[in-house]
Every structure is written in C-alpha cells, then in structure tokens.
Image (cartoon, rainbow, N blue to C red):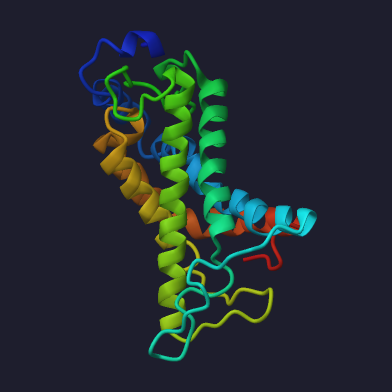
Amino acid sequence: MESISFRDVRKFNRPSDLLNPMASEYSPFIAPLLVLWLYLPGYLSNTTAMLGGKWIPEMTGMVVKPIDGGRVHGDGNRLLGDGKTWNGLVGGTLGGGLLGMLTHALSSGSEDSDAPFIDPMTGVTSDAWFWLGGEWGAVFVLGCVLGFGCMVGDSAGSFVKRRLGHKREGDESSEAPLLDTLPFAVSTFLFGQLLLDPSIVGSSDLVMGMAILLLITPVIHRAFNLLGYSLGLKSVPY
C-alpha cells in the first residue's frame, strides 16, 4: 500500500480516503489504538482537570467554585457535588488543548504506515471552523473540544451518580465503575464526531474502533486514575 503523508492527505476530500484502506489491513487491532491516540486529549483531560481543580488551588490558595453552586436537587442530593468545579472544567478543557498540541507535535508528517500514531490534524484545511490562529491554534482548539467533551460527560456521570444516591465523602469521590468511565468517553467521542470534521478525529470510519475502545475504557480509565493517585493528583484511585 502506498504511503500517504500528512501534507498529501490534504488533497483528499475527507480523511476517510486515508482510513478506508487502513481499516481493512489493521482492524480490529490498530483501530482502537488509533482512536485512543486521536482522542488522547479527551482521555487525559480528567487528569489535567485535577491539576486545575485541586493541585493548583492547593498550591496557590485559589478559590475553588463548584459548578452547581451548592444547589441541591429535589431528591435531597447535590446536583453534581463539590468534585465538579469551574476550576476543573477550565483545567480539563485547556489541558486537552495542550495535549492536542503534543500529539500533533509527536506525529506531524505521519504516514499511514505510522498508525496508530496518525496526526490529528490530518484532513484539516484552513476553511475548518476551528482553524483559529493557524495550524497550532487549530490543533489547540481541537484538543480543547475533546477536553470539554470529556468534562461534559464526566459531569453527566456525576449527575446520574447523585440521583442514584452515590455521595461524595469529603475529598473522596464515590465509586461507580461504569458511571466513572463510560459517560466521559461517549461524550468525548460525540464531540469529536459532531464538531471536528474534516479532521481525521471526526471521521465516521473510527466508529468501530470507538466501540472496541469503549469495552476496555474502564481498565484504561482506572490505570490513568491510579497514575494520578500515585502522583498525588487524585485523592482516590478511581
């Protein structure tokens, strides 16, 4: 199969022109790894949210403001709880942008043979809505979209947890394995698919890899949380 570089792929109408030949050769082994790489800014945003919502405030004395403002639902439980803050939302979103720039830097000029480490900017041209401030500005916005998508899904999971009676105990979050993992991943995928076309991140050819990745996301998420816990960024390993 002939190699296709990042610059060459701009001549294609859609990134699926690159993915279709890849899919038949690498799936289902490379497909979930490719999705994980392209959506890494979303997958790691929970860790950067902890930097913005916990570590930095503790170091600087910055005021931490809960997203729900302390409001209580009709069931007697908080809407989201103290664990979901505006500080963390901003940290997770901006952290996603920086991670997007990192994956772009590490895979710039990648070819199809480099899968799963394909440049997330593959397929993007200057007429993309997120082309703000040139190439690096565009990939920063791309990462921020994924980071924000993660934060939205994570907050949705917390909302459901509170409705089910799972309460936060002091600094420790309640444990609910599926609600702690799947909502943020599904939301991140939806934000990417709906908002990041024509980037390869928004290609519908990634759906199969997404489905496979969702099955193993609880394991991956727990691994990242254990890392954050070992580094002192999280109060609990989940």
